[in-house]
Length: 398
Image (cartoon, rainbow, N blue to C red; front, side, top):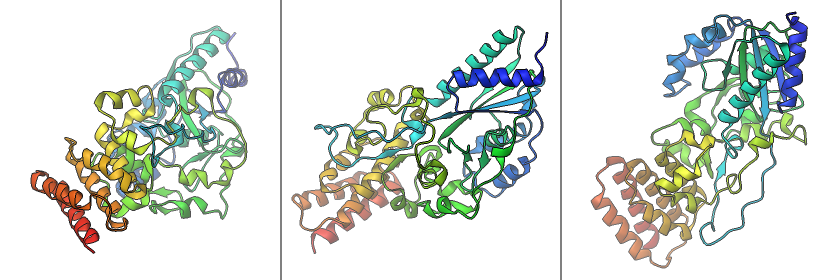
């Protein structure tokens, strides 16, 4: 006997909790009414150069583009709300300043974890229902407006910082979807009602002022975009605002009252790996190609190439590094990527500018920078090196 919509929803909910999901919601498959908001956001240039968003914009309008027979959009949320682990004890390779990695990227790759769990959930429901269930499992790589799906399914509401907040679970959540031909009773929508009220903490806390207004993010100024999706230089006027962040940013979530207190703990599969929350910056800067691949293996950190990471590390060192980090940065001027060399030169200039003269080896540093300027073939890197050499000469001759 076929499952009733209420029984199907109850079965999904029971199996979802058993698989460790923090929330599950259901909505009839239909075109997203707010797709026009997404299109307007794209037209205003706020997606920066993330062209894949525009390339698949129409597909995001209706989940049936992914499964024509779909009747229910099942949305799940998996929490990564783990406490900050203590820093790994320093050794000779990891002394000095540390960088910060966004919470979601500190453990195993959530794309893999979430997709596996979604497939297990679908199989468990199919086995329990005794019939075949057609489905498509989606994570954030699929052309689907996942926060719209979560709101429609009653999981939570979209906040002023554009994140999805599930009351009682917060916003440190990764979302996944199952588009299925099984009809499930729609979920209550009480948690989808916006609850930000007059609070603007997230908007005010953003280091780079990336929020145009409530509910509108300009990716071109967002640290997550700048350090992950952005393949090129980080704008000079934003570098000092990035602080020690080398992959993503959690500021607008850290200050949110819905994330305060204990609440729900994160899924064990997304627990931070040792040394990944606050890694040594000089250690990251010294990673060779093979070491880098090992470091990012099976994690969401695979989203960046080595040159992007070293660019980010250089900016972080420029912001929080000191004289002891200069030899590491000078060595990094030998990197093949002009993108890295340019940001390393910027970092050297920043450290030199706040170093009380005269440090040991100041003359040698100036000579090395002059030699680097003479050998540099990339215009942007040469300009940054020339600025660093000029700063060193002015600072150390005063």
